[in-house]
Length: 187
Image 1 (tube, rainbow, N blue to C red):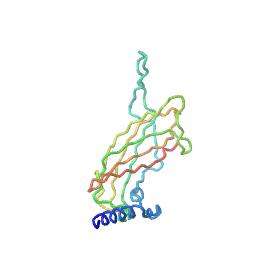
Image 2 (spheres, one colour):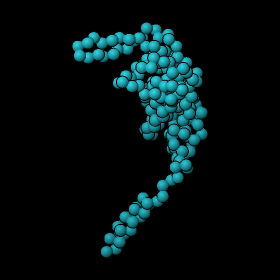
Image 3 (cartoon, rainbow, N blue to C red):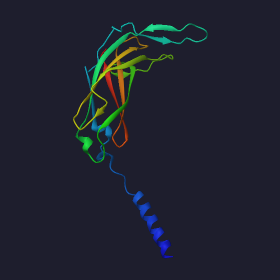
Image 4 (tube, one colour):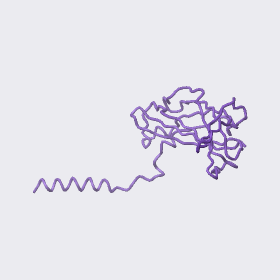
């Protein structure tokens, strides 16, 4: 009987601890708040010097594919660094932070607002990382710079776009983090 009371007491303690009020979201610093990402130039400037880079449009129904040139090309550099929020206990970052993946998405825009293509058309784009100062952030306020080169073609045939950069990270405790930021390409 005494053993049964102890088991019930332990279960009640576990249940009670699970019922505590959650932390106020305003008090919790997210990893997103601890990582600053800037781009240069801002806004991104695009030109028509595409170097002859092309993309394929698959036509299907025994139609030959189209090979079309990209209309626009841009270079830009991102600088990432962890700010003082990274030392907050709620973030719990273990240094160094390693970049595990980078993705670029180009969306057509007007006035800085994404305007989805109509009629089944899609944006065409590709990118390369032309240089990087490394693949990890060693400490707070230690910048990591990466230069991107992108080629793109939009159904609107216009230059203006929103570029979404998605970064994936893992800290030294193998905890994964992500960061996504948008930057405008000037019209």
